[in-house]
Length: 340
Image (cartoon, rainbow, N blue to C red; front, side, top):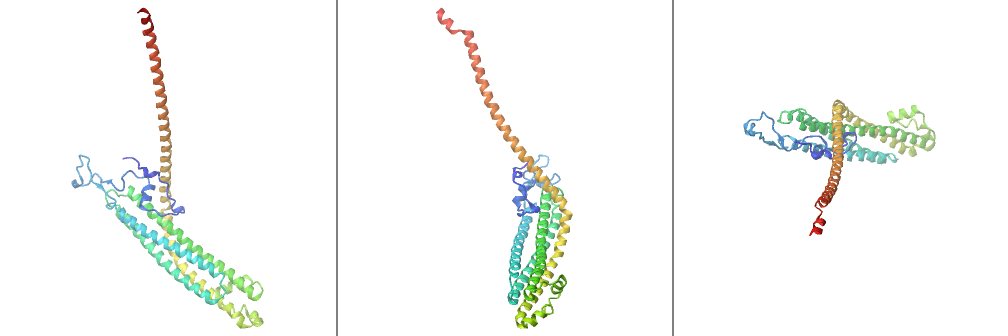
């Protein structure tokens, strides 16, 4: 068997960023496996007689279904679809957060809060589902090693393991984005509160006052002087909006913190298998570099071969001309004509 030309396909970016999902064709293209490792992998020598005459060297080819790859990549695609849903929800939450920063009415803030809470709940459901499916893939990867031709270290096992680790890393990165959103919400909530206090009182509150307001949401005491000067009715709208914003931020932070445990669980798994993934990616990158170098050398060899043939033709023609001249010089046909 020879190295498959599929190795010429560029290496996937995985996990450092990446960002595209590893489909079955991508894995077959990216990993340095031998030709027909997946679709026509030969059965091992200890197969029984029904697989062919061992002495004659004939063995039954195994298809991707028998190797467990068809079902495996279907499940990978299902997980990828869930990642797409997470991307959509993350964008919706980011947009709602930006919208909330310009809101000054309690009713509008409450509506945004309800939308964001609903989306965060959906994120939690999807995150738990993805975690469960990845754990199932881990178990199936171990069980699949018992199949002929799929043992530990085989092409099939390496591809399954690398794909699963890549999914984990992608999941970890996505959960990290939600944690970043939580931190942004908390930080920018503080900025909004500072602006509200300054707008109502005309003075910039100290750090302790802002911290107390963020912690309790009770702004009436802070705005007591403004209430006395401007009247309670004019200030109540701002007080209600600050209280609604406080409740929204606290609830969103609580829900997003629940995702933190899922993030930590996946992070542990990724860190444990990260070196293995880096090693695989390094091997793939090296293999692709070698293939590309081989292609370049092959093109140079072909060009050199064409040039060699061209010069050989010139040499043969020149040799024939020289031989013809020598023959003519020896025979001297013009001397024979004179004698006649």
